[in-house]
Image (tube, rainbow, N blue to C red):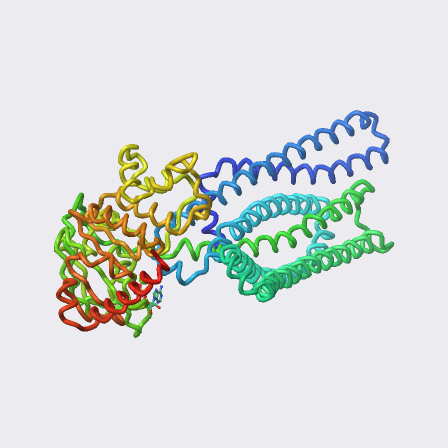
Length: 582
Ligand SMILES: Nc1ncnc2c1ncn2[C@@H]1O[C@H](COP(=O)(O)OP(=O)(O)O)[C@@H](O)[C@H]1O
Ligand SMILES: [Mg+2]
């Protein structure tokens, strides 16, 4: 009920078409009752040999048909109009939410389940909204109209007829409960279907090479089969409830006929009234049946709406900060910073570090040591568990989120591009209006021009979905160009050159040194040769800083960094002498 009322708040802006739709259904219901009344008129006309009935009869029939036609159109069109608009608003609200909820949500919910909420579940809501409105208002009104007419004709008989209503209500109530439960399961199974399918679309190479087809087929068949089973249960319930209701109504009709025709009962009705009474009681059967069918749609819709509201009710990213900042200096301090994704599983412990404006700081360490996590804390994708991060001597939390993020350019470990041109991907987001000159400069600096100039459409080349038409290294260079173009005081490069060959990396290196100049840069690097000139090198292990200093200092110290460096150095020179890489 609460969910239904909440859905109604989305109807509010469309009250006028909604009202028109209801008027349409009232016209329809009136026309249905009119048909029953017409029967009375016609039969009585024959009985009493009315002279003008051959004119008024057909006229009345056509008028009733016209009113019903108009009512049908208005009702159907305007409810569809309202329902489609609600779907649209819900989708937009959901998408807006996706743009604002914390990153956690995306780690805790599979993309398949999120996508199916937006595509499938919302459609279920329209069905609920249109079908339920259409049927409950139209058929509900028809039932009321016919019932009123029946009462007017013979209230005693009508009461007998009405005695069946508790039985119908019972069937409807039992079916409702089942419909809603099944509705939830069908949605979950749709989420699973989307999830398995999208995973397989993304990992097609792995599936093929590692012979995953059978396993994936089984997974998909199971997910889709689950959907099939639940849908069939739903269909059984729907298909059963209709004939049961019909049977109840027919029994009542039979009883009515028995009572009306019984020689000992005198109803005092004319033939016309009696025919009209049976006609009206018969006409009630169909809307009554529809009312039980609509129940399925409503319950499915409510189940869908629940899952949609769950997403809509998610908290947005915490943003209590008030400081705005145009262009900061880029001084960063970690003050006893600790962080964990899950309780009692520290990923970063007690980090202390001071980075002066314009410095380049390199982070090295085994994978899983927490480097990317640290990079994610700076734009406040996550909040520190304890301790603090300061930017220009103010706690990150004091800044307005957009202002803070405006200070940072980030190149992530896995580059995902947007469907569109290379230019669109470089001048992305707030940089849409940047002039051509700057875009080309950034593209030059990131060595994007090197491969773009060989492409027929140049910067207008389409990159394909997720940039799949480009190589990993090319994608990385585009992401670097985007970061360069942003020209923010803080630049974070999370293994930004890992997909580049040593040759290109060396090229970019020179360009990067230009870019790093004059801004604070945090480089997470795998290849140590690229960070020798950093102002500080921070060695991390299991979420802790185990060493920091310059390249020379750390080498002289002869501990962790020196060990790592020695290892990579000998590996590289061994490769060099074998001529395997260069
Ligand atoms: N979203 C997440 N939820 C829970 N644990 C995570 C999440 N992301 C990373 N981790 C864990 O945090 C640790 C550090 O990961 P990460 O910062 O990516 O390391 P690095 O970048 O140094 O390779 C790893 O043990 C990883 O399993
Ligand atoms: Mg990482």
